[in-house]
Image (cartoon, rainbow, N blue to C red):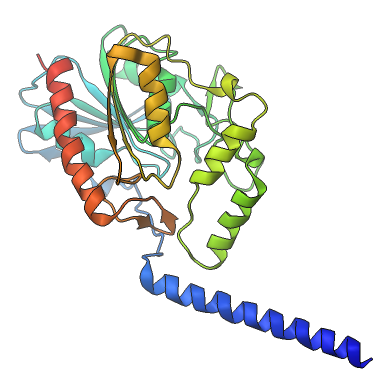
Amino acid sequence: MKIVLKVFLGFVVLIVAVAIAVFGMRIYNTQKYDLSGEMPNYHDLSDYPDSFTGGTIEYFESGGAAGFHLLPDTPVATEPIAVFGGSEGSSNFDMALQLAEEGYEVYSLFFFGAPNQNEELSQVPLEFFGDFLKHAELEGEEVTVIGASKGAELGLVLTNYYDEISNLVLYAPSSYVFQGLSFGRESHSSWTWDDEDLPYISLQQSDFWAFARTIFDSIVLNPVKYRETYVSAVETNDNSEAKRIDTSNFGGTALLIAGGDDAMWQSETAAKEIGEALGERAEMDIYPEAGHLFGAPPAVGGLAVGGTIDSNEAAKDESDRRLLQFLEEHVTD
């Protein structure tokens, strides 16, 4: 009986010690990081201006397409630009505004979360881009596409269905189609065509220890690094090559931008793979010390994105310069 009691007391002491340690780590991480995780409401139209210096902004909804049309009074190019945000659900409006102020006609597009779109980033019908082209009267015309993170994955995927895409700028890209980001239901592809899921890498096939570390970080409020989950999902998937995004249908030019310290996913590896596939038609800028989000801290809303404040700021400034240089060479009249 005494032995049983000692074992029980030892177990209780261990549980208490673990609880104290977890509680201490949570307090430490709460003080060290901004863990508010509060996201803006990107679909609150009252938050957006209806004009900018030298141009107008108009919100539109048409079929499965929704977003903003930023039109300078005197555009510097006949070829418009369509921009996408990432898994946060934005239309990358800040970049659109930045480019519009430089004189480019820009469409800032939502691909989920807007009216007539899926609420979550899962099974997004790629036909929404066709609805956009029809609304903007751009069917058969050349369009430059700029995407960031999941928006970069989307931009590359779209080249397999829409010949209108003449130039690509991909920030923190993916070379594979990954599982959609939905919660509380079975997993699906991020994208569909003709109501069918595109072949995708399932994150549920990732390494167990990568998953365990993610759970542990969540418990102790340490910013979660998803990179290992994405890397191991590719490595352990039954047929990863079948889920790689085909680049052979894209005949234009591309600018590929990524941070070498990306903690979200393996974007610098993807940029190199896409660049090798496109050959001389691709320009590639890898910022070794930068993370997933340029101009951001290394952790945002409970997620580790990598880099440092200084390296991410430096990458933002340099990549902005490179973007304008690329557009001047390939898009400007």
